[in-house]
Structure formats: structure tokens, C-alpha cells
Length: 249
Image 1 (spheres, rainbow, N blue to C red):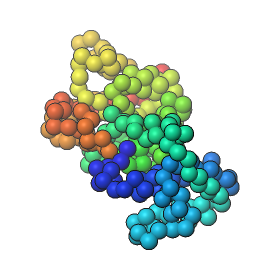
Image 2 (cartoon, helix red, strand yellow):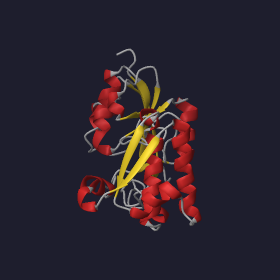
Image 3 (cartoon, rainbow, N blue to C red):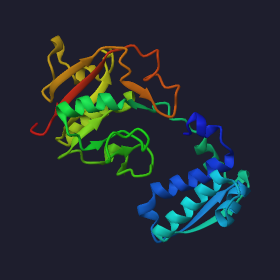
Image 4 (tube, rainbow, N blue to C red):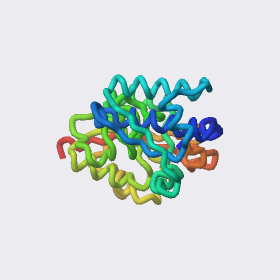
């Protein structure tokens, strides 16, 4: 997804930036390879091959050239009509409705208490809190795509998952006999509630501590999608920081 400022730029700028980000995201796989890039933007083909008189476009073109040179990548960019590029066009219109995270001050507070955390399991290159991070999609600098394919053991995991996979995240941590910090809204009616608390507010055996942060502290913040519920003014719930440890279970 693009930021509001980026979405206002030309389609040529966005296409060039997409090429650069893709090369950065897959650099370990594309090193010493010949890469064919299909685009329905004729200007993009010309700029990658010859450069541009427009400073902002030329800057991206130079960065693409430098990266290809550093990684020994041969970039073959080819124009095709949009009618033959439908899959890429469809993917470019997808919106991540769960693009949100926690603010830096909140992370520092919890990290100072329960860290140092080593891997951010649900992040992007834009909202990551640690150098090592997993993501839903390929991102520049990402260590792995899909946190659930990774072994979380021997790490101190920072876990701020989409609400739809909170239960799965807890189960995966237990399966890996791992430890970490889970950040979720205080929603007693949620499906994950009984995985944190037993009846009578007693903690599950793998939950070692819970901190509650009161509403209106702006703990959750928007990412690229400013329409997500978490991070909006409509979100008024408390937030829980939950310390998990399943190493010896």
C-alpha cells in the first residue's frame, strides 16, 4: 500500500518505486540473476533504460541501477499491455485492512521491562520495532514471510498479530516452546480471551504476567491504511501486554 503522499504521485513514480522495493525485498534470491519485469507503463521502461529529466524519477532510476550493480542483477524490463498483466494489476489494488502497529514509546516501555525482544513476528519494513522481523508479504529487510513457518524457540518474540490470528499465534508459541510478549485489546468476549485467562481471572499456565494500559493512550497507530479500526479514534478499549513463557511446558 502507498501512503497518502505517495498515492498522489504519478503512476510512473509508483511503478519505479515498486521495482526498487521488489529488488530490495528479494535481493537474496535475485543476486546474480537475470530478472524480467513486465510493466504496462511505457515511461517506466524508458526511464529504467535511459533515465529521466525529472529529478524524483531519476533518483529512483539511479537507485535501481546501483542496486542491480551491487547484486549483479541483469534487469530486463519489458512493456506489455494491461490486458496481459491482469494478475499484477489485481494484486496492486489489494488493501491490507490490518495495517496497524504499536507506537515506539509503548514498545520501548514494554521492551525495557520484558526484553530485550529479538524478533518482531508480525510487521512490515515500515512499522517494524526490531531489525529482525517477519511479515505477511515480502518486504525490504524481512527475515521471513509468514511467522507461522518459523520456529520461535530461543527468541524473545514481539507479537502484535492481526486479531484474526491471535489464537493461532498463542498456539504456535506453545508448540514452539517459546516465550515472548503478546499485545492485544482487552476484549473479554473475544475468542482469544480463554487462552489468556481461566475462569475467575486466573492466568493460563504459560501466561506469567499481564499489564493493562488504559484507553486513550494511542498505543495502536495506523500504518499505510488509515481506515483500520485499531489506531482510529473509534478504538476506546484498554490494551493488554501479556508475557508468555512456554519453554518448559
